[in-house]
Image 1: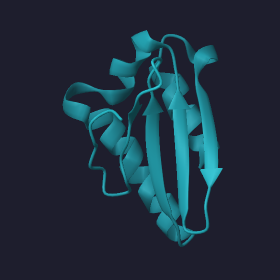
Image 2: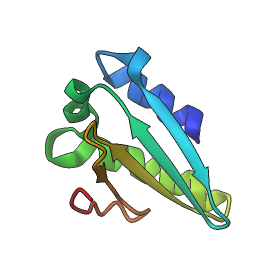
Image 3: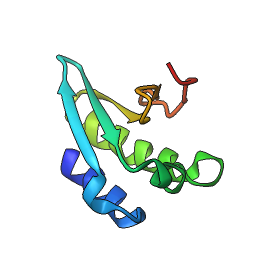
Image 4: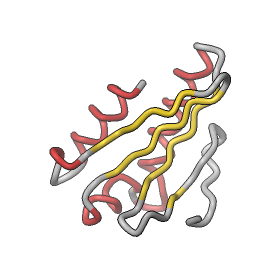
Length: 94
């Protein structure tokens, strides 16, 4: 799943060499932390969040196949996070 996220995100951004995906594996939940160039964050989120929602939907399906839940967090440069659970709902930055 990590390789999938990297592949898709690198295809969308202007600075693919700055894309970093870290996987934090729990017993039933896998958290993917996505770090990228600040100017690329909007490209990954997309208009009205459609792009990130599509990525999260595919990630959720892949995780469910393995009996787990997946979360994708975009780690912003200031250390704030944009979180979402496998339902695709995004919370305010932490």
